[in-house]
Length: 240
Image 1 (cartoon, one colour):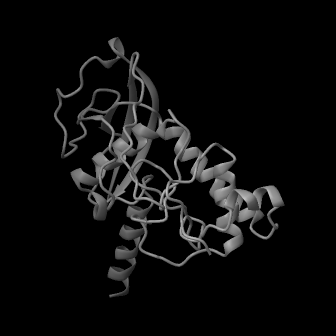
Image 2: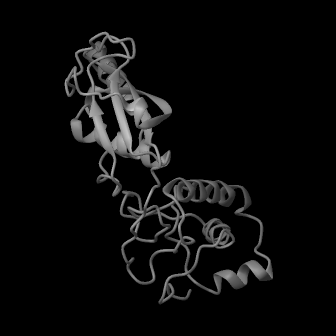
């Protein structure tokens, strides 16, 4: 019994070590072409379940290789939907539009070792067609910001809020907040909430834990974003 429990914990642990965000989230709303190949980079077949041996065109003629991500996917997350979400997530973070997924080596029953080649079509520019956010819930990023910049702004401001949460706001910083309630923009472990378009939001659609950080941390987080050109939505969030 103990050996079975240890094996189960190992599988869960390895599954959770895959380099991707919450796989339960919907697909990122950007156009990304996901190509599954059962050939490794050296051309050997890897018996990757979702792949075709002839799936990959000669991309180097029309696209540039941006980076290669290595994934270790446990059996609990080994669905086509999850893998394609991972591909789209990595692609938009790199402002790219094509991902080729290949087996890295022999695939076993516990963990799949995959490489994700991220390609950018020559001349490609990422376009973001923001929808209209629910009034009073979402900070609006500066115009023409890419997903990559939005991700970086959110992550860096969340880190800054954790560092400076006990430092009182200056008068100028407090004037940016103007008495608004910032408490739901970030949670108790300093994970920022964002919508499908990586805009800071109080809706927290991707969170299961609704506890919030102290007021100082959430205020610091929002001030950091406002100093980077973000704007309060109209109408503004409720007063404290």
